Amino acid sequence: MRVRRIVDLSVPIGPGTQVYPGDPVPRFTEHSTVRRDGFNLLHLELGSQTGTHVDAPYHFRDGAPRINELDLGLFAGPAVLIDVRGAGSRVPVTWDRIAPAASRLGPGVIALICTGWSAHYGTPAYFDHPYLAADACRRMLDLGVRTFCVDTISLDETPGEQHPGDGYPVHHLIAAAGGVIGENFRNLELVDFPDPLVTCLPIALEDADGAPVRAVALQLDV
Image 1 (cartoon, rainbow, N blue to C red):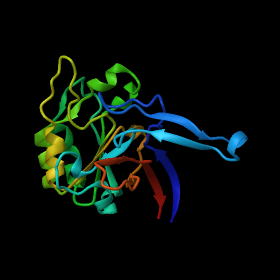
Image 2: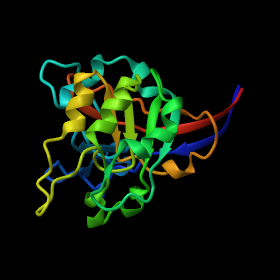
Image 3: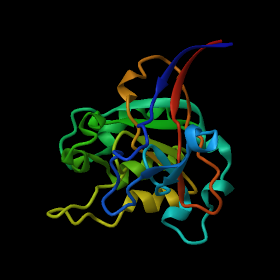
């Protein structure tokens, strides 16, 4: 077995990383330098949901598993790309858009929901993304999906000044099922090969609600 191709699905983390409204803004400062100390070392300040990251059920459910308590099998496995590009600003992605991929969804499968909205990353429009409808989420959970990854800042609608949101129903559904959500993915449209293997393993932050990841899709020669 060898890796033929790797598609990087992660946004870089730095002072310019776009964050969810109200979340901590990342800050990097020099702690040590070669000139002064003999080595370079950064001091990092960032939120647990910074950049490309995964949510544990604990993010929305007290008493639920935290990021370091989850089976790592949730973060690596065969993936199915669900292409819903063309969904408009703040439009729910309903089951009819998911249904063409339904026969390939099941336990152990990582669902990659490609909205194409990562093209807006770094702009105000990024917050006006399409989002997964609650009924579509329920149907995917019924099929056994427990890992949902999307190329937007949230799988639910992001509230805004004129958009109060509806209480994060999809986050609650997935948390109740013991599943995980990956957000701020990018380059999903480049996963154009069959049977991709996706890994989005989180930093092992103790007792955390989520953690940044370096997500990749691998094309393997078996």
